[in-house]
Image (cartoon, rainbow over all chains, first blue to last red; front, side, top):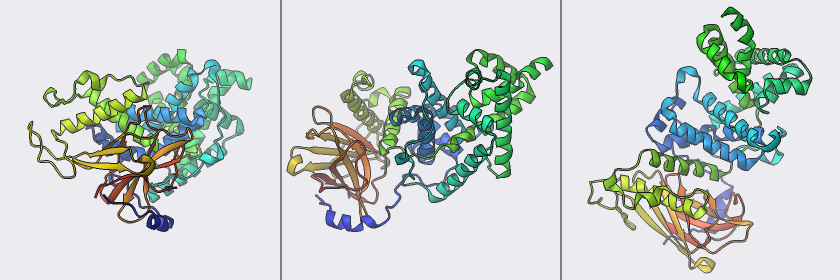
Length: 211
Length: 249
């Protein structure tokens, strides 16, 4: 039996770890979903490697609870795995499909709590770190995209930004937001529409392809 | 129709961002389905709303989540598409009806799922070398490796079964000592060159057994090793000499 030379192993630990992901970054998202519909586990793993961190971050922001966020991400990927053959690329990207499912499921979990418990949206600083083992180019591209979206949200008027964040990450309905902000329901509807149109306009200007 | 459109146009944005009133959703969706302008508006705004997910600060999920998802997917697909009856090697009821709330049952289910997967390849288990297939039909071979314990883990052992395409490895541990509540077992893949790669963390069942799935190819690795590390997430690097390991070269 081979006995690892741990002294040697510790000597080389300072070296960057090799990426040992199973599937090469050679397939489009749609290809991966097609592979999943054929039961190819590699495709599921590659999709997770691409969007698992994003999905987890999204769910964590909604739920504020790491364990519950893990549960939601697992449920969602499982749902995507089992419903892969239903994916229609004409209705949007795989990423949007996946993240929308994560968001909706996270909100469902949140609503399942007694008294509609709400969480702060800020993450614990210790959790805001970069993940290992990702495609560096994809990471850079994603980071730029995230920066652009954050900037777009930050540029919204505060009342529109608040409305959007309460709706999307807080899971509140328009009527609840209107009550919280003490404004007419029609005002909240208008703010939501305006905020989304401004975000779209800004993102288009930045060349974000998925808008 | 026009009046409905005027009235419902702003509700399309609420639908897109997921904040519509539950009682109104059917009414809004019905309108969107029948109104080309609102349909286009909805598609445009829902894609924009989908981008909001990118405004969340990025956080890293624990490595175990990836394994959990693959295990659940395999289990799910087996339930949906059961293997042909002639290839079942264990009574189906005992394999596919575990209580998910019982860790032991879950471990059994994971192992059973793997067995079904292996059975679906018509494969026999072979120790240390490739098999020539099964009596059912010619099939790709699986490879099995043994992990043996020493020192404080001298009573422990492991059995690693690699799928024929090398995409999945099931490791079935036995005789693992129980750990303090703040410690976990961490599984490492030892490459031919470079640092050990963390593969999974786990706590053993009450009887010292555990089944895990490694979802990475073993190509380029020479050994699987297990150490005891701080829980619940383990260590990025091993902090002790492994007392349970086996060659996979």
